[in-house]
Each structure stands twice: as structure tokens, then as C-alpha cells.
Length: 421
Image (cartoon, rainbow, N blue to C red):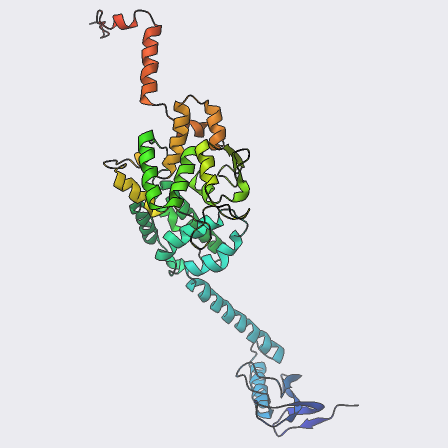
């Protein structure tokens, strides 16, 4: 059946009425038969004919339904363009131009959205979801929540400068955080920034480059004496049973705080007196055997589910930082009184260092100490273990006795090594 075209009252505009298709303008308007509008015109000896659209469709310019008058207006615009040799001469040209304008508009909107995104939103919505496979994700979340978010979480990424990062550094230093932890926090900021740069949210280098961080030197030179250790444990036991147990285990197994915080009952074997630490710093599992005191400590605890944490927080979740009670204990006992060098200050990690030092001073082979502590290389073991002053003194006395006449020579003639004139 041939299409019956109807000439409208507008010059150069005709339409076709669909036999069944209907539409209505608005939710309450009457239903009407749909119309397909076509315009025709001639310019420079060339005839043009274009389908404008259906009455049920909306004009992208104003969002209103097509009608005869709108079709005529479009025809006049295209005729003028064609006669004036302008680029847009057809509906296809017009729609292509509109498409490009819409794309440019959308690109500008996306650009502004990217420029306005905050550090916190990007961390939460983009960076952190990709951390699901990383073992360090919980630690990064804790450091972000504690030190990074309060200062720059609501700040636009593009507005981040070294001024803000220096505040983070100062807050962490004032709180006595380890240099390595400060470096960790700055590494998180740098990783988020680099990801944002990859997503074209920022263009410049990360401002962490403009902040000078203290050199990492966590080598502990001081360890607890047996009396200091007993005083500390007694204090903690009176204040917090859980903190006491954590400190006791670190002191007598050499475990790191993070290893103890993630410890589950599945890793405790009271029959053979062993503990298996998973996901250690070296990346390898480590088995440590219990002393009688450690075994008694576990036997006194109510055993939980196999995969249940032995030291959860109040909500049953993993703990990520040492309780402030530990710092109060150190202060009340005066263990850091007058100590200026951070390497000489007692921290929770000093318990692990004390364990290693006691082993070495007791004559334990350094290679065995390496296995007990789970160090990746031997150099780390020597870093944690320092011979006591008494051992050095005895070695020097032994040397003196070993070489005949060494002591007597000290009272003999003084040899002048000055240059002859």
C-alpha cells in the first residue's frame, strides 16, 4: 500500500499519518495518531528532502514534540545555511553537529566532575576497591582513616599540596609514630595520586615529592632487662588482660604485633606446643615453639572457633594498633624518661627486640635466632641483636689474657711516633 502524503499548511512541509501508531503529549493529554514529518527545499539548483521525525519524538534542541511549525522553522534554517554555503546544510549535518556539541558538553561535565572529586571519595570509590586482593588492605585502611582522611579526605585531589602533607607528617611525628609508618602513609597518598593521574584526574607530579621525610632507621639499640620486663608485664596485667597477653607473647615468642593480631586458634597446637604465624612480613609462614609460660597462657584462655581471632577488638574484628594503655604503662614506669633518641625508646616492638637480644646473650646461635624471628636475611638478625656490654668486656679481658705480656706493656716505655725533625 502506497504511503499517502498530506501537504501541511506550512510551505515545504508534508506528513504521513500512521494507521495504528498513537501518542500523547504529557501524561494527561489526548491520544493522537502519530505523524511523520518531511521537509523539502531547493538551493543552488539542488533539491533536498529530509525526514524530520515523528510527532511522538522530541526535538533534541528544546525537548518538545515535532509539529508542522517546528518542521517549517527547521526547513527555513537549513535553506538559509545551504544558500549561505554554511557547513550545516542537511538534517544529517545538523544532527552530527548536535552530537558533537553534546559530546563536548558531556566531556566538559566529566572534566569538571573529575576536577571536583575529593581525595576521600576517590580513595573509597576507586582506589580501595582494587585493594581487595592485597594482604595490606586492612592496614592501609587503618592508616588512611587515622592519619590521612582527617586532613585531606574532603580536599579536592587537584588542590592537594605539600602544605597539607606536611601537616600529616607533623601529626604523626607528634604522636610518636615510627618513621617507617610515616613513610607508609606517604606511600598510600602517592599510590592514590598516581592512580588518579592515570585516570586523568590530575596532571602534575605528586606533592609527596616536595616533603622531606626522615630517613628510615628503626634499629633498636635498647632492650628490656628482666626486671624492666617483669615490671611492665605486671603493670599491663593490672590494666588490660588482652594487652598483657599480647605483650607476654611478643616477649617470649618474638612475634610482631601484626602477627599476634591476626592469630587464630587454628594456628595453636597445644599438643606439640607450637604456634604457626601466617602472612608474616617475610611472606613465609613461621613456626615458633612455646615456652612453658606461653603454653600455660594459652591453656588458661577459653578456646574459640578454629578461624576465630584470639585477640579481637570489642566488635570481634581484628585490631590494627597497640592500645594507648601500653604508652601509659611506659610513661608511668619511667622507661623512656630522659630518652631523646627514638631508637632508644621502648615501644611494643622493643619486646620482639628484647626477645632476640636475650636469645643472643644466652648464647643462641644467630642462625637459629634468624629462624625464630623469621628474618628474610641474616643481616636483619644482626640488626636486632646486640651483645651486652658485659659480653664485650669479657671478650676484651680474654684477649688481654690470651696475649702474653699485653698488660705489662702498658706500663712500659712510651713510644714517640712523631715525625723526626
